[in-house]
Image 1 (cartoon, rainbow, N blue to C red):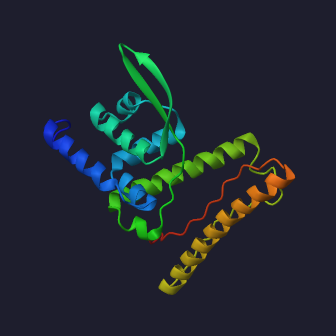
Image 2: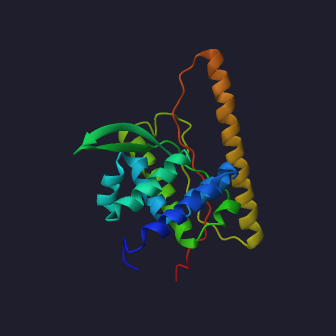
Length: 210
């Protein structure tokens, strides 16, 4: 079916049903639902890099404006993006958004997503990580502390080893969040300025080099 060929009533009905079904869901369930469409992942990727309006996103992606506007609105309702400004444009008002949070999805949540969306979500996170590292290296902050860390470790694992490392990384993530909370408490007392940082962990199967 070509772009824009759906009737108005069926599109409105589908959107109303999706909005109604979002009520009563946990934040993670809403996040999974919010990123269950590849176009939403693309919109979120763009808004994580720059401020843009739905029309600008439409021009970049070559998509239908009403379709992009709908998915941008869903991202806004989920709290993944925020409205930063409004500008009058040819008798209308253009709304400009930016991403406010990098979504975190558990392994169980990820399994609920179609493979195409899982790929898009992973690519989105890698783009953000590469952008963070590039900026830090270019600005000289990456190596500004002597305790910076960067490793890449190719491995040969059995199923049990892969599962144990995955669990260990989940535990490390919990430690990261706990240390961030503890740091905030200490800085409230000491007045120390925070060090902006990015922590990243990854574990994935590689294709056979042959």
